[in-house]
Length: 294
Length: 289
Image (cartoon, rainbow over all chains, first blue to last red; front, side):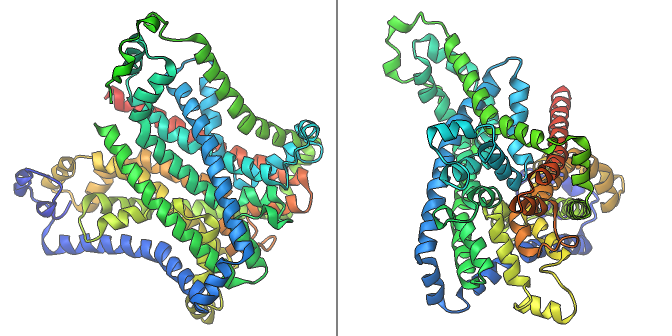
């Protein structure tokens, strides 16, 4: 395109100098126009609301915001969110690696079905995900007799929130680990085993180091998604008890109660947390891409 | 990475073990099936059972009642609109990111994934903070008779934010692979910038553009967290299909909720399958070429 001569990522591009490209003053102007449109669009869509919410949270002073975020309800909701996100991430990491291995290394008649099932949580609206759990574990649900016999309450209780969080964040680890795993040659694993390593040792010393960046990328995406979930959790938690209130539910209730400072303060806190996670995600993503190109 | 630790090397006792332990393989298969069966297949089965509990006629009546139908229409229309906007702006942004150099490009590139990290409910709260009637921008717009929050523009904005990365991230890698030489060749024979884009760049990125667009659309169909905050959820006006499902659950109309859920599920699953099919096809054509 325009301004090729200035482009920095090409080495030895001098050959292009004899190309009659539509560059010059007008070309440069056009280039900057496109850049301006892209940047202005992103700034208006993503940054402006971010600034507005920070102003909104601290609009009544830093003290008011800090008071809201350190209230008993806010703190307990943050704790619950953290516990649920860590729990869901742990479960999805263990099963995700298993399933990714089965999808990549194994070949049998049911593989395509499994592959299709993995994508379902991305296709399902979170509200519907929560609703499915109510149908399964609520009154007259297929699994209600079992949970009743065990004396476990799932719907409108913590197990329901955990299951909902697991469901909506299920595909990430599998979808990030599978392509990396596909690039690790099975020969290396076979080699390790022929010289006597058992399965677990092979996985630990050969497979895991090779997939680690992809795995961490998937794990961080899972965690980010788990922290931010509202639809599914809102439906299964019932929103009755403050014992089952996650941070996003806290925001939701604060909005209903017209406690805008509280809602904005918690939203800013979650946004800041997400930014931290985003940095981690970007780092792992870059490492994953490096692994895949080498 | 390929080196095997020294402590594994001298253990002849297990050297003769078969490379593939059948029980290990079956164990993993079983784990995968049980986990996905319990977590995904069973919930899906129960919702389908519930939606058709009173037969197809009841299902049809649940879908076509005025509130449900207008919610579905609103969701479909806003989803189509944001998909089109994303296709244009996403392609432009990806093109700018791949082809041009400008200050803080790395920062911009990292910022693009922001909607993936920020909770969708927080996105909604942010939009209210900016465009709410009592806020600076919202107040100014209100004075000019433009309503964003608790109106359709708010829904469109929320959907645009949460689907922002999809097209960019789909198109970007493909654009990177197009050799500049192809574009340069088009210039040498006198093609204009627009012609070059249309005849050289666009055909190459079309599959990626479709993939990104379909993902946007599927995501927009099911979006709840951001929309529920900004839309106002007035039945027949700003009530979207996912929020409608939520309302039906709250008012204990499980069959109605199931019916709309099944319709949304069928739609988005078809889309996801289409994406997968297209990606497979592209993968194959890449290999064969």
